[in-house]
Length: 242
Image (cartoon, rainbow, N blue to C red; front, side, top):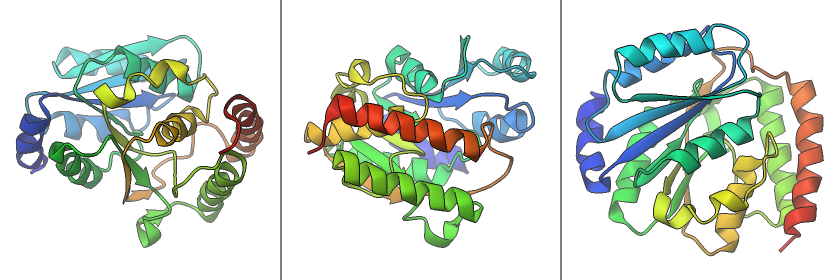
């Protein structure tokens, strides 16, 4: 059971807050989230940041919140993955902050990452789709896009690692000074977060994750790629390369 695995880890970490940005997720919201909420131990809360959904996502969340005391919902008026993640992180007071996507929710990564965080010597853990190998069951084009983005982050910004998107676990006391420094680029907020953490000398570890395509991405790849490239060069202009 997930609860029995998480309980001793949460006790060591004191409080844990999982942040999930969502946009037009009515099709998978209940099936993905309900089972997780039922298995959470005391001290483990979930913040769902809904950003500009036009379907029934907000209504579903409001109904779920009535029966789940560990669930908090934040509503933003405009779609922006970066703003959603930032709002969730900056509004939380938990000792350990986690970020995961609704279509992933890799509980094995949570358990493995919290075990490392409980030891106290790590500031941030990044879930890596590239390290996942065969456990990355997404379509070829999405896997290729991940590798291209990582290559460009290394080339243009000196990133050291295999992934910047996907699940994260972080020590709030270490990471909080970085949150207000990061911009609101819709797709690259997670990248800026981890690159700034690297440049500050924080201890970062990567763990493989498991994921597969359970629904179409809310924003088509042909729309995301040009925007990500634009934001990548904006980020290069802001941070420079080391």
